[in-house]
Amino acid sequence: MINIQIVTGDSRPIFKQIVDGLRMEIAQGNLPTGTKLPSVRGLAMQLTINANTVAKAYAELTSQGLLEARQGLGLFVSEPRQLLSEEEQEKRLTGAVDAFANEIAYLEFSDQEILERVEAALTKLGKGAPENGTKRG
Amino acid sequence: MQHFIETINLTKTFGAKKALSDFSLKVDPGGIHAIVGSNGAGKSTLFRILLGIESPTSGAGYLLGEDSRSLPESVRGRVGYVNEEHTLPTWMTAQGVMDFQRAFYPSWSQEIFDQVIGYFDVDPKQKVSGLSRGERAGLNLAMALAQTPSVLILDEPTLGLDIVAKQSFLEALMFTETEYDSTIIYCSHQMEEIERVADKLIIMEKGHLVNNSSPDEFVQRVSYWVGEFVGDMFARDKMPGFLTAKLIDGQHHILVADQGPDFGQQLANMGASSISQSSVNLERAVNAFLTKNHKSPSGAYDRKN
Image (cartoon, rainbow over the protein chains, first blue to last red):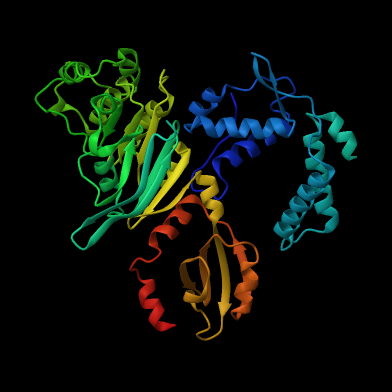
């Protein structure tokens, strides 16, 4: 069972919502390495959406290196590895940090408190993928 | 055969009114193609011409590669049509209607019929007059899919269905295992449905084709800008790709089509300040396209500025 929700009427297309949702599930360790993903049709039925949208999301996650196809068996969560270029990773990190800073700018926390919270969140992510955790530290 | 549906400069006039104007559309085989347009945008006229019920004033329409003015029986047998009324002979039983329909279609698949009708609670012995709207919709869809059509046209099939029937309808439509890959033309006003089902989004406005791409690509075409104009500096006529605008708390909220990130600079050049950009969802993007050029309260707003 894949625990992701999609909503219509969002500015994020459904395809993107699936990519983000699955990426989060993998990062949080709810879908550990080697987990078999539902079939395209199966996830489409679960979410009541066009199967092509699921196929597109799976293709995107595969190209990002998060999923891998095993001949005749289906799609699986792959060993954490990086397929994005350094430049692309840099771009995404900058985007995420900017968005984060923007969101918290008006809140009354000290920098120290904020950094501690971010660190705690990163540690939580690291649980499912220790290699990533150490690299970050 | 390259396209399942193709129209070339299709034009249809009723008196002084142009229902279709130089309408050129290509629909590739496979997938669900949603058609959206305001009432009177020309959708029904398009279908009537394609099905050979109406003739074009000029231009031509082709269905499965054949000229719509002279569709051979073999092509007619490969086209399914479900309209919003779900009209069926009220005096017959569900079983009777199915038997009657089945006799016309050599490629009928009982397996598909049973699968689709399984989504709905229809007793074969029940009379059509006793079926709810949702059940009639289900029976109609089951019969249309059982014909294993190459092209299936659904004209607002979920209009007036309750939420349960709507869900069943969408599931049956998307998840029935069909041997044939039907190409589905799906006409609807319900954006949340379109977002879920559509591979392609075709938008018609006053007889013109204004979009034929995936819904995601379409949303990318529309951008949302906010800016403040001093006095009467705001001039919609000078804005490239202008769709709609609203004045909210002294700021102009503007939707434009096909403009890049440099549109902000253009707004600044027109005298706007405090410019920011935001994103839109599918419904908003479609509405912006459909309300463009339409009479609306923003007409009054024009005079004030």
